[in-house]
Image 1 (cartoon, rainbow, N blue to C red):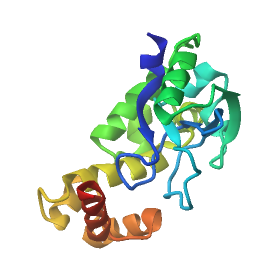
Image 2 (image 1 turned 135 degrees about the vertical axis):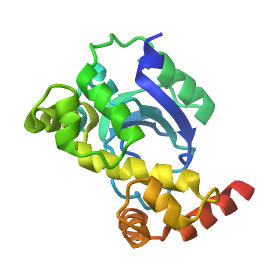
Image 3 (image 1 turned 45 degrees about the vertical axis):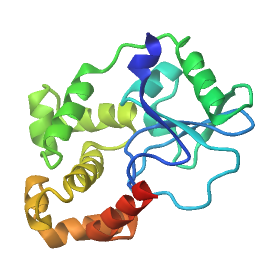
Image 4 (image 1 turned 30 degrees about the vertical axis):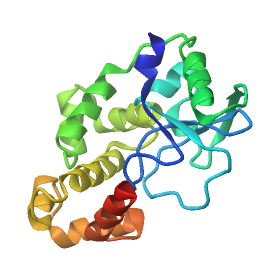
Length: 213
């Protein structure tokens, strides 16, 4: 099904982790309006719109099948059609059905490989990534930005925040910093503060409280 090649996951009102997401989202509002929103390097803030905000997280490169390069999707969003108004679940189903009618474009397999490499090693050097897929650094940056919406280094920085927060509670913060490719624990704390305004321990505490509620 085309939708499986386009959509990584979905959410209503809030995403899984209180972190920026380095991916293009398809947002569906209560009136049925759909918007594409660009990838994040810092957490968005502000009140949620009424009626339940539906989000579909697209795979890296998926926006190209929608006729839009990822680096052309602004962070604040751009209109992208409509579905019938309804409950959040109804709008989610309608948006998925609309995406299932999309004609898929060929993926940039070099970029897809680099995305996987960055999930395995978020702090990998761009030069090493480019060499692994037979591209120059300039070619990789251009093609990665076109498909993903961020440069490889920026993408990796957000990916390792997610990796670190998911490890929280399983090891010390110093060990997590080392395993995720930060220089040290203070470097990790600085990266979390820059992206979210909070240290990782405080962010993890809020996440646990929200899940308990």
